[in-house]
Amino acid sequence: MKINLADIPEEGHSYTWNNQTKDIAVILADLIGKAEFHIEFFIKPITTKDFDLSGSVKTKLPEECSRCGISIAFPINEKFHEILIPKQSHPRGGKYSKVNHVSDLPDNGTESLEYEGLHFDAGEFIHEVIALAAPFNPAGPENEDGNCSICEIPVAGRSFSYTEEMPPEKPQSPFATLKNIKIN
Image (cartoon, rainbow, N blue to C red; front, side, top):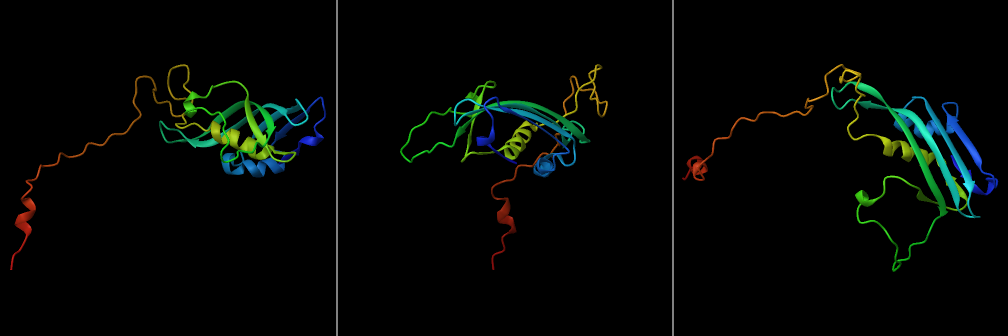
């Protein structure tokens, strides 16, 4: 769903999308399936070419619990704040500043996002916000007793890793393969 930034009034424009917004539902279907979602965002011009974008996404991702393997609907509640800027050219010999590693990036604050022409692809942006919010090890929340709220397994002090005992290998002599050789 592309938004024409030239149509944004000086006081800004608010957008609210949910399951009734069919265009965005199709874009998000590969991530959330038919789960309910609620997206709110506000775009306001800062200058003639730069825009302030802020909002939130609430939905659920179909995941498997990393503790017990049961299918869960993992809640996603993400907020975002971006400055939309025109796409910058990066000439071959050009110089620009960047962080050494993604771990050096600040965890909060405003980010910048580039758009091309006067159109911002909000559908693609929201898709990426949800995709980046997906946890590496999804697990259900703990209840007040310290158990998994989905499968009731005690979580505190328990390792959920899997290790398999391998039988010890007998060391072989380097000459062991020589006894299988047949000489004519």
